[in-house]
Length: 246
Image (tube, rainbow, N blue to C red):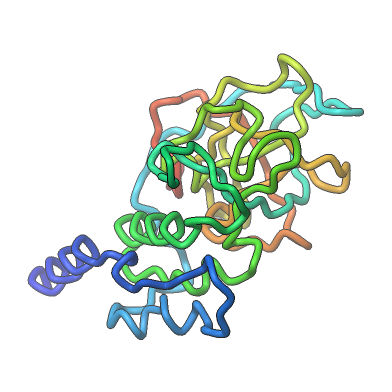
């Protein structure tokens, strides 16, 4: 049994999705699920429950934040929309640009890196199921800046942070410092999420917006799942799925 476990871990460590050469930047009829799937990679399909490899105290405190047209006191439960990707400090673009020129420039490399991180965290992750819609394979649109740029301007998150980012329509100083960690919970699952890089969405229908990886790790659907957001006292906890200590 120990030998088999060792082989699985080593296999996840050496796998590099970038080697799959999946091109999201050009039009294609190829199904990503057929290219980035557990079956193709010869990796075991994980159980339905997320393997939460980290644990820690999930205690928080009440916090009222001013959003556009309303105030919200955490912990708060609501419906969250799906957000597109932000460019990270590890993404690169031609001519040393910090951000892409279009919503799909070099997005395939970004997703491949994220897939690699997910497989290190949870061996056997089926990235075709994680990034399954067109919105999962695009940069944030250039609304008040550049494609892939958040509300902090040229301040970019790390790869690990970007996967677990959440947004709210904060007003002024209500926006937390970039990198501040909170806790998202749904149906018995918890994820340490990162705020302060981006604002949105504007619709009051949503409490805020999550990156695709957050909704996937929680097993939540944006159209119907009400996810609870809380503050997190322990800011040293790494972002991502967590088992909350009792």
